[in-house]
Structures are given as structure tokens and as C-alpha cells.
Length: 335
Image (tube, rainbow, N blue to C red; front, side, top):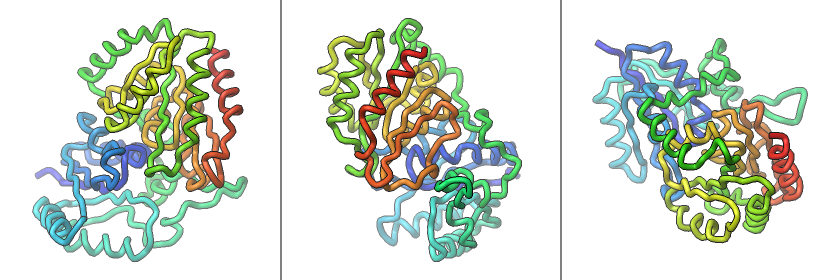
């Protein structure tokens, strides 16, 4: 009988992307096992892309269990759903938490019949990101997970471990989009101008307007693409109506995996620290990330060597517009 493996990961698109190498490693170790992803329904459902949209068709996961915990019935339903599957192993990939939550989760999963649980950060050193001695930064969140799971031989800077394993059908659809956009003859800029936490993390709207105007008047023929959730599509249409000289495309709400394939052929991504930025970075294209004050330096930074970060340490709006524009100009002129 096939083993049943559960990967427990909470959070949105970006949270799932930073754990991708572990999905690859678990898949390598458990090639013949049946793998389930246990993930939560986002509280901000109107502005979130969930984990299943990223990993469906990837062969990294066979089944998805999405849950919410709004009341006692939700918790009971989840408990009996897990108990009825009879998981052999569970891999715990949960963001920074406290000891009480770790113990609570351990008891919950053991009572639900999970035989072995890996990655539980009982010790404080596993719950917190280690400080890097040579700088004022902390280790990346992905590095912390690696310590928790003890996957020492997993190379995090090897981008084959970040692959979404896009299938042939998805690639064919992406190629059609790429052909329609005439990417071979136009440099393609992708923008994600919305924040991720109901207003927190938003760079001033006026900054984005100036960036868009700067790109519209740039002395190259450009494709300007916008990405976001489907609920942001209307806002993007209004913004696109003011762009006069360049080609524009609205990818808000598009298939995550197909759009990732389109991103591979893009010139530059500019956006807030959120899921679409992580998606661009795993494709190793030029990126400019606008990070806010609620982030610790380096925690959510990418392994992508073409990634540039502007970090407003106390407030995202401390990020200097002119420095960002100069960097955009440098990248485009050096093509």
C-alpha cells in the first residue's frame, strides 16, 4: 500500500513559493507515495492567490485539502478528515510561531492519527530566523525551514529545486500568449502595483503613477503587463486607459502557472513584496522588489542573482522613487 504524506503549509502564493524546494525534496524521497497539501483558506480571499493554483498539475502534490477554522465545526471537520486518511508522515511548514501553537499542532496531528511529524520547531532556535553575523540581516525564511527539516543536502541556490514543473499543455498556452504579445520584438515589463495586507505595504499610488508614466514615455517599444488577483482587474483597466504609447496587457486573475511561464520571457518585474514578486524571482528574471517596514531585512529576499531590493525599513514609502527609476533605466539601457 502506498504511503500517505501530508505537507502542512499555511499562507498565500508567496508563502508557498518560498517552500518549493522542500516539495521537490519530499517528492524525491517519497516518489511512490500519495502526497497531500494541507493549506488554509486565506482570510483576505478577495486579494489572494491560494497554494493549489500554484501546485496543481505539478506532480509535486497529488491532492489538496483546503480548510478554514472559523468555528468549532470547522475544526472538528478537519480533524476527522485527517483521521480518515491515515497519514504516515506530515511535514510541518508553518511560518514563525510560538511554542504553544507548536505543541497544540503536534497534539492535534497525533490525535488525528498522523504517525510521524517532521519539522516541528520545539526549540526557540528553530522558531526564529538566525542573525547573520556579517550583517544586520537575518537568514532567509527558506533557510530556517531547511534547518527545521534537517534537509542539509538540499541546494537552495539550485533553481531546478524551484521549478513549478509546468506541463506541456500549459507551455503551449503560454507560447500562444507570448506570440500574441510579440515578446521577441518588444521588451516586456511586468508590474504588480497593489499591496498584500489591506493597505499595509502599499507604495504611494503617486509613485506608481510616475513609474507608469516614465515607462510609457520610454524610448523603447515596451509591453507593459499588470498582474494581480482577479479582484484587482478593474483597477488595472482604469490605469491602462491612461497609457498612450506602449502596449498594455492585463493578467490579473490569470492562471498562475501559465503566467509564470510567460514571466520567463519578460525583461523586468517591478512590484511589492508579495506572491507575484516571488513568482518572478523563481524564473530568474530581472526584478525590483519594493519591501515594506514590517519585513525583516533578508527574510523574504530571493536567491535570484538578478533580484534587486529597495527596502523601506520603517515604512515602504521611504523607498526613493528616483532611485527606483534610475535602476529601471539602467536595466533597460543595458539590454
